[in-house]
Amino acid sequence: MLRLIATSLCLRCQRVTALPLNLRPCVTLSSGENQQTVEALYDLSVDIQKIRKLKGWVLHQSPAYTKEVADLLKDMGASGPIISRILAVYPEAVLCQPEEMQAQRELWMTVCPNQKELVGIIEKFPASFFISSSHHDSQRNNIAYFQSLNLNKRIITKLMASAPQSFSRPVEQNEVMVRTLQQAYRELGGEEANMKIWLQKLLSQNPFVLLKPPEALRQNLLFLRDRGFSTAELLRLLSKLRGFVTELNPNSMRRTLAYSQDTMGCSESELRDIVLNCPALLYYPEAILAERFEGLLRAGISMSQIMETPTVLELTTQIVNYRIQRLRMHGYDIRTGSLEVLNGTKKDFEMSYGKLQLRRERPLFNPVAPLKVDD
Image 1 (cartoon, rainbow, N blue to C red):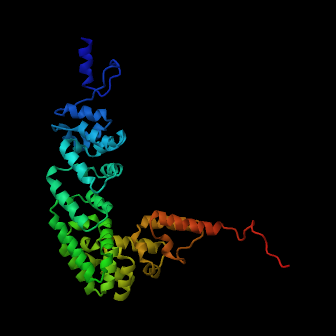
Image 2 (image 1 turned 90 degrees about the horizontal axis):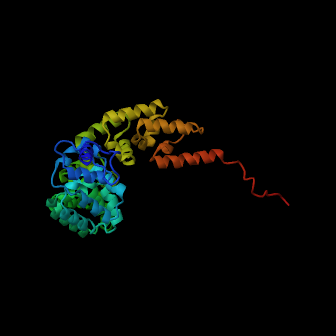
Image 3 (image 1 turned 120 degrees about the vertical axis):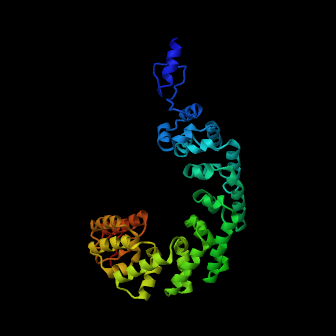
């Protein structure tokens, strides 16, 4: 009788300290949930409340293969906490059939033979790994195609992970976009010997470029050519802008260029030079540019300084103000100095800041060095 009461209580709470030590704690079930799934996730220390809140529908599905997913990941070298994090973020993984998961493992290992690295990829991009078997043929064909281009395996792996849609669709669609990119590269004077490196860099920086319509590339290049950019300058933009040729459109670029030219009061030729030095300028809508110009001018920076170092426009107003304050603490007046010290990533800035600090604190002479005296 006592055992029956304890079992009843166990179904209504996650942990019951009064239970005998030889009985495993159970979890509370919500209406209609798959008991085996909930208990298996609980055993793996997965945050079940998080799943209920964000993706509760998964817990109602049957069949589910929680133990099989965990065993597969463990066999690949994943630790318990990693398995727990993967299933908390992407519980849909438990709905993948074991044979599908094994097929995915074998497929991914053709481009990522290191299982430890593959576990790291799955942790970051679980949805890219646990997909329907209906996409396996497309994945296999796309892998073969990109391998035929002699692309680095790491690039192919990155494409599969960060842009899985491009590998789940027919290979012919990717072939069309790649040929369009290659043709544009050649027409703009790119050297054939550098084609593979250029393509790898472009795909690595912007994997989603494959999902854009090829016509967008042609329209944007024609627009910029009409604005006076030379063939060599267009190739430079194509190589630096991480696939801007498909993310933008002529109308947005026209508005941005018009606003920038009007604000800086520069000529067409000067505007082209500014864009070549700061291609990202083409991305920003007028509202963002207005805020950044205003923030820089409010900080005492002149328009001529901005035109000389336009990459400062890539920084948010908050970052600019923070960096200016840090520099001011060491006596650097941004109003009279170069804006280059503001540029770059956080790491770049810290390096520049460190050099300024070192220069300020360096002694005027080395007290250890021997003094030179006349005989």
